[in-house]
Image (cartoon, rainbow, N blue to C red; front, top):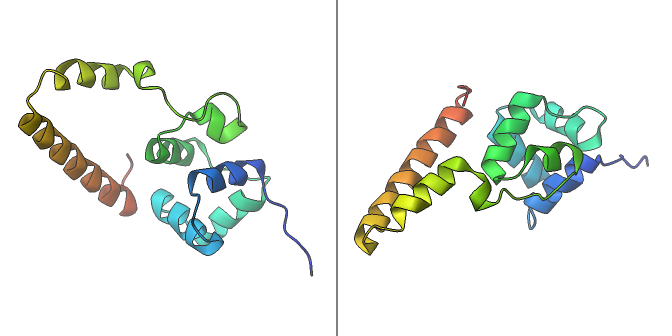
Amino acid sequence: MRKEKTSDFWYRIIDLTEGMESSERVDHIKDICGVEQGTVSRWKTGPKLPGRKNLRILCHHFKVNMDWLELGVGDPYIARDDDPFIRFMWKYVDRLSDDDKDDVQASVKHKALRYRQKLSRGSSP
């Protein structure tokens, strides 16, 4: 029996999807990127890696740095202070009442769900 090689990229995906079984992980990545299972299998064994579009989608989904996901370089997670949008949001959200914060959180969750649905239909982000 031949054992498949696992790409370094896929080991980083394993880190991000800890607790998932292998087939569940492949399905999850396939659904996030809207690609075929064979494509994800090629990413898993290398040397083919996702293109820039799918790397951006995965980075956005997992909230990780592209250099880390693609190359294994640097800190995996995006620091809150490094993202101008997050800095902007914290500046104003911190001033809100608890009820208003709950409303903002519900709105962001709703937008994120709509975004994921759009991605799963194959629309570009």
